[in-house]
Length: 556
Ligand SMILES: Nc1ncnc2c1ncn2[C@@H]1O[C@H](COP(=O)(O)OP(=O)(O)OP(=O)(O)O)[C@@H](O)[C@H]1O
Ligand SMILES: Cc1ncsc1CCO
Image (cartoon, rainbow, N blue to C red):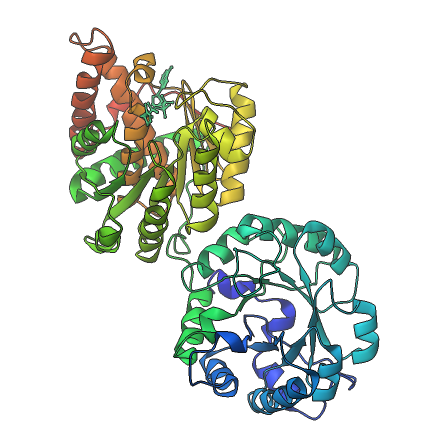
C-alpha cells in the first residue's frame, strides 16, 4: 500500500462504500441514531463565487463527486437563510445519490433544515457543545483549528474531525489566520494525537495539485495519525473540469510522492560493523556518476559558477547553469538522470518564483533537489528566502549548509556575519540539531565544517576528512552542492548514502590535493583539488576502494 494510502483514518478506511451505505441508507439525518461513516480523503469545500462563468454549483459538485470527492461542505458566506436552505436541499439530493456526506459550514440551523449529515464550525460560530445538542449524536461535526490552543480545546471535545489550516496563504477566506505550512500542520497533528488518538484531521488552505504531495509528506508526524485527508476549494471549484481536477488530486493523494524511495528499498544500516559495505557502496555511487554523467541544473550564485561547473565536470557529471523560469521544466525532464541545485548565495526576492518553479518541476519529474541556504543567518531577506523554499516550494531532498546556515534553518537566532560560519557548539550538540532538522523537514541535512555532520533524521554520521585550505577557497561549500546533486541523480534509493559518497569523494580529494607537491596555498590547492576529484573518479571507475583507507567516519 502506498504511504498516502495508509493515511486514511480508521473512520475513513471503510468508506466510500460504507459511507454510501450509511449515508444513502435509511438514517441519514443528523437526528437519527447511527453516525454515518465518513471519508475525509478528498474533502470539497464550496464557494459559489469561485465558479467559472456559466456553471452551477450543483453540476460542479456532481462532477467533482464523480471524480472522487469523498465529502462535501457547503460554505456560502453571503447567502440568506431561505436561499441557503433551498441550495442545501438541492445539493443534498445530489450528494445522497452518491453516498457522500454533506456538511453545512457555520449554519447549524441550515444543516437541520436541510436534514444533511452534519456541520462544520469555527471559533466565531456556535459553540461546539450547543451545535452537538442541536444536531444530535449522529451528526458529523467538524471544527476548524488554526493553532495549538484551538487544537487542544477541540481535542477535548467529542468532535468528529478537525480541519487544520490555513496551510498556505489563502484568498478564499479573507479573515484566515496565519498560514501554518506543513510543519505547523504536523505540530497540530502531534498535539491532537497526544490528546485524542482517534481524532482524524483534514488540512485546508490553498492545497492544489502542485503542493498536495508535499503537504501530506511533510506534515506526517513521527508517530500518530497522519492527515486523514485534504480539503480543497478553488482547485476544484474554479476548474472547468471538476471531475478531472478531483480525480487528479485523488491520484496524487494515493501515489507515493516521486521523491520517496520506492518500498521495499531498505536503507543501509549505519554502524561500524557495516563500514566495508558502506564504503563499497560509496565506490559504486561514484562510479555510477562517471557512467551515467548526470545533468546537474544549477541555479547558483555568480561568485562560484565557474568553479562549480569545473567541479561537476571533474567528477564526470554535466553542469548547466540556468536561471530562466522558462526552461526549468525542460531541464527537469531532459535526461533520465538529473538533479537540481538551488543555491541562494546572491539571490534576492526576485529569484523566489524561479526557485518555486524549478523545485516543483523537479519534484514532479522525480528528480532530486539540493538546497544550499547560503548566508541564511546573515540578513532578514535570506531568512525569508529559506522560509519560502522550505514552506512554499514543494520538497527538497537535501539541505546543505555550513553550521551557521543549518542552525538558522533549525530556527536558532544565529547572526552570521556573512556567508562564513563560526562554530558555536560541540559536534555532539550540532549532531542533535542536524538530526532534528532532518526529521522536521523529512530531508537529508548535510552540515559542513572541519567535521561534516550528515543526517536523515534516523541515521547520523560524522565525517572528519578534508583540509583547512578548503575553508580558504570561495565556493568550496557551494561546489559541494553540485557533487551532492550528481550523487543523488544516480542513486535515489538511499539519499544519506549518496550524500556520504559525495562528502567522502570531496574531502578525501582535498586531503590528497593538500599533499600534492604543487599545493603551496589555497590557490594552487584548488587546482590540485580538481585533479584529485577527477583522479578518484577514475579509481572508482576501476572498482577500487583503497583511496578510502584513511576515512574518519563516525556513526552517532
Ligand atoms: N577546517 C576544515 N577542515 C577540513 N575540512 C574543512 C574545513 N573547513 C571546511 N572543510 C570542508 O570544506 C567543504 C566546504 O565546507 P565549508 O563549511 O567551508 O562550506 P561553506 O562555508 O558553505 O563554503 P562557501 O560558502 O565558500 O561555499 C566541506 O567539504 C568541508 O568538509
Ligand atoms: C562570497 C559569497 N557571497 C555570496 S555567495 C558567495 C560564495 C560563497 O558562499
